[in-house]
Length: 191
Image (cartoon, rainbow, N blue to C red):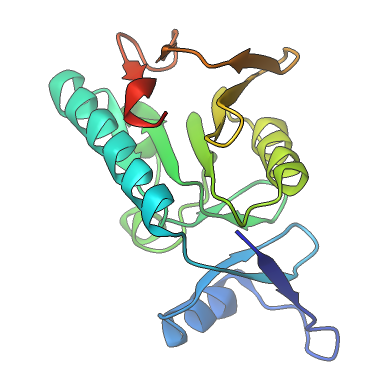
């Protein structure tokens, strides 16, 4: 995905509320905000990436309904991270007890909470280096498990809290480990 930061130097920093309203006033744009306050317009994905995202989300949805351990979110959900960034991973999941600590208003807007799990599916227009930085940002802000899936190289980078990144080449499955108990993603949906 190609991203374009907007230079808002001549404007005062947008508060969280103003950024939320800005996003609501521009519903046709998919927006994120980095920790420096730069607003990023993200391009839509192509058909293959969109289909893979949908297939992965279905698998997570089925698992989440069966075990009911938390809340699942799609790529349209924007989270306010502790470092000030507003990020929208392709898939995110939060343990139910953590989600329950938020007020109804916090849940309705951009939840000020770091997901327990995030997944980013690299699309042909995404920069691997930029997405790796984003994955590290997630980890630095408390994400316990993250998967960066690169369909082109058939590689998955696994980000675990307090550990070095692990790279798998052409894995058949991914396990949710202790973060997503009993979750197994069959990668034949993607490769």
